[in-house]
Length: 216
Image 1: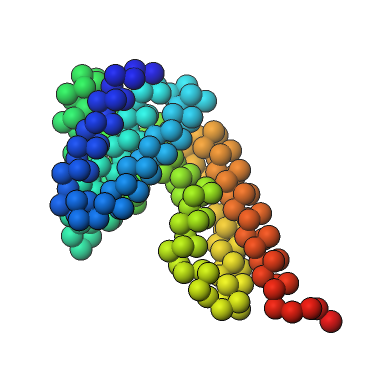
Image 2: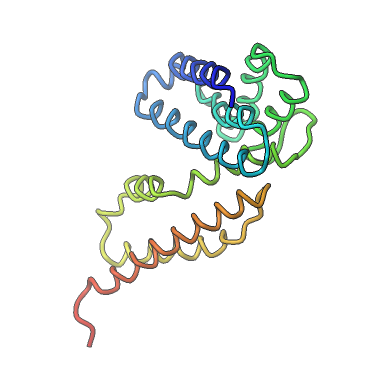
């Protein structure tokens, strides 16, 4: 992997996030977005290594997939943030000296990672799909369990609502288990993470069911 290019990309990402008015006003969100970007980049590197993609290119793509969070989102900002990230990334990638066909693949992957749509022509290569796959994989790991429970005020819920929460999560996880991803590597990683989530919420639900009293 070309560490010099990766370090330049890290510096660019930090610079963009540091300069964003919203991020300056919300330092915890800035820290989260940077940490998430690093996790996604590391997942992308794992996929690249296993699938034979260029590790530098996929790491760079994943680092930049949310760079548009440097901007203040408008009404449809979240849905557009993949396309905006691609627009911000393209001139930077040219400055790195990457070939135009590789820039196109990287930018297309960044653009489609939110809603599977870009505002410029491109090909849904396995490489491009891997940007969104890495992003989705980060949504299902130990940190995100803690984040979701904290965000949803789980500890403050009555017991019955806690159980309903866990059961609703299990129902949703069952629907996600066989989701198709861009590569076999990503699908294997996805299956492992969904299985971990299911095991966690099954144990949580079981413990909650035994928390209301002694069964007859």
